[in-house]
Image (cartoon, rainbow, N blue to C red; front, side, top):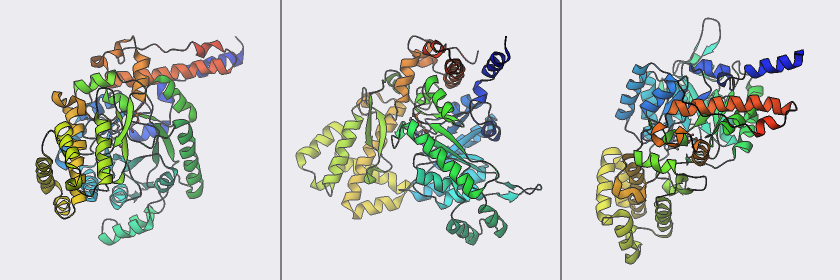
Length: 477
Ligand SMILES: Cc1cc2nc3c(=O)[nH]c(=O)nc-3n(C[C@H](O)[C@H](O)[C@H](O)COP(=O)(O)O)c2cc1C
């Protein structure tokens, strides 16, 4: 055999799942494979899901959004006791800024070393506080930051902010509060707020619906520019999420240079996720086009939307109707009575006054200022009542409440349909067989096989990859 062919075969053998991404990223996170499980709100990315991924050499973010701090603390205890690498979500909460700060403090107090920062529109104090906690100069002169942020975003302006040192104004604020020392404030100017960004393309839940093929190179380019501008010792890194549901998608992400891949939708369909079996079954039947955008509960008034599954549920349509009414009326009282009756009969299944009383009691516990504001401001009261439906719709889905199936809010992206099509005819077609580690390993092994085959294809053997359909196996054996 001549030497180039031998070399080619050797390099093909080295294309293993663990080598597809950024080795330094895997080392820093203490994982074998460049594969992350994205945060999914209200514990849908559950403790069990993070442990399953962690045990298989990957990492899952616990989905803390929408949970009480006590529940998050219990989850952190369980994850820490499990001994696997894990991270937690820190989600931007413009409606409840205190919650963001409470969570950041909780993570600092519990020693959670890795967070996924998401939905941020700008850099906030709790974010910088988390990142700078414990920053110091090590004996060898390098700067050590015990707390690591993987920021998830889809806008280049935001990527620039995360890849820059924390804003001076916020560093000074922390200095004044006595949260950091002068020495730490000086060091803060020499590190990026986040060393790592997951570029998030069209995905389940909150999404800008950016196409991965356009988004990833852009964020990668922002990273290169920031690296050049600030000359960080430790290189900035970029991964890709959104749309990953097949080995082909993973191979494409790694071929573009993604340091890691991240999945969400397909993990919700796995047995370890914190949703109901009814939802898992619905997800199992979801195809590419069975999706819709619907108003988001957390940013309803701002007109922000989320991507949801629409097969078997009328949630997207009903929630859109509520948003339209919110836009067109100043109060619940100004909605025409026929329309109001229809809402009470079909969507709320109760008088709107009763729903307001329930909502009010909820907010009196959680955030009394919201309830007080709603007493004064009828439009805000309408928003809270409508948000009751949006919030409950996600809860009914997670709990599998049978008589509310028509209202399930199931966050989901096109990766789900792609996955379902890929696994058709295999054991992974059955919902109860969808174990997260097995799904992830099939995607990674499949991606490696496709890339190996592409090397043959790109070196003149055109037929190899056209036939390439990686075998679906029962990993871990
Ligand atoms: C059910 C569900 C809930 C989600 N909740 C959150 C969340 O609370 N915080 C967050 O950062 N991302 C959330 N996401 C986004 C995922 O973490 C991940 O970035 C995304 O699902 C990746 O795209 P994919 O759905 O195409 O796999 C959610 C996604 C899904 C499907």
